[in-house]
Length: 287
Ligand SMILES: NC(=O)c1ccc[n+]([C@@H]2O[C@H](COP(=O)([O-])OP(=O)(O)OC[C@H]3O[C@@H](n4cnc5c(N)ncnc54)[C@H](O)[C@@H]3O)[C@@H](O)[C@H]2O)c1
Ligand SMILES: O=C(O)C(=O)C[C@]1(C(=O)O)C=C[C@@H](O)C=C1
Image: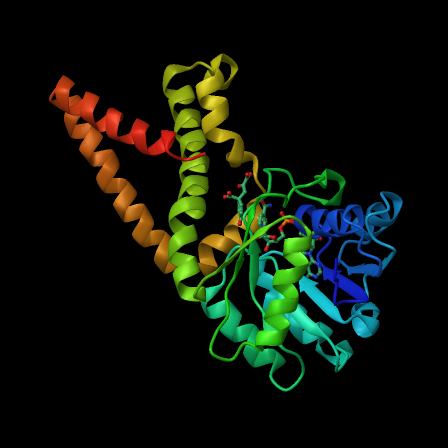
């Protein structure tokens, strides 16, 4: 296996940054792994779990890295890049693992102009948990890793990032950054917002019925709302950074809800059956 990098510094050592570090180690990455986090406990835990070799709350730890990977919530990217900028070596590449790309990728390129090449990336794997204490072995194995180049992207840097993720067992998909945001507004951001909203609705219904409905839930509720246990800061930032695409996906979702609502109102059995059949076939086609 060719690794191309000698020292990787992860900025934001949470579930995803920590899982990235852990799986680099499990796959035999021979170099050093360091991390920066505003939370000293994340660094302590990362060292204790042997996920990183060393870490700090100071950005200066990144100065010997030849790869710096952002894995904070997307809302602080700008602040983080400005803080780390003075410490980026002239050999380093900067990449990220964030859930929103589009304008953010261009903003990162702008901040790093003349300093380091930036390669936007997004692993399509995760869990509803957060924090380095919840790292997952083989999280990226068989998962897609989206790379979002722009017309400015350094192709050699991009190939090195693609190779690194292939080494972790991921399948590389190359996508335009703005297209990425429309796609993931639909398949990831919309379901999360809907899951949080379902919980909100059931909470209201609990009050209406003077019954704690959450004590009476079964598998349907559990399967549907697992992701409503996801980190609120991460999802706040995703919703704001991908606002336009998410609003447009929500509009389409509202049309679907209105459609099924009308069928129920009319007690249209055939209509409902065909609506459910179509959705069932689509869902069954997804592995
Ligand atoms: N959780 C998922 O399923 C998932 C999947 C793919 C991508 N992502 C993306 O990965 C990134 C990280 O998500 P996560 O689930 O690991 O979140 P997390 O909450 O587990 O970890 C985020 C870490 O960033 C640190 N942090 C916050 N602000 C910081 C700052 N200014 N400087 C340095 N560190 C800071 C936090 O202390 C925390 O340790 C996000 O951008 C998210 O969109 C998440
Ligand atoms: O499995 C989960 O808990 C996830 O939410 C993972 C998930 C997703 O929506 O599929 C969440 C956000 C990411 O950017 C990528 C993956």
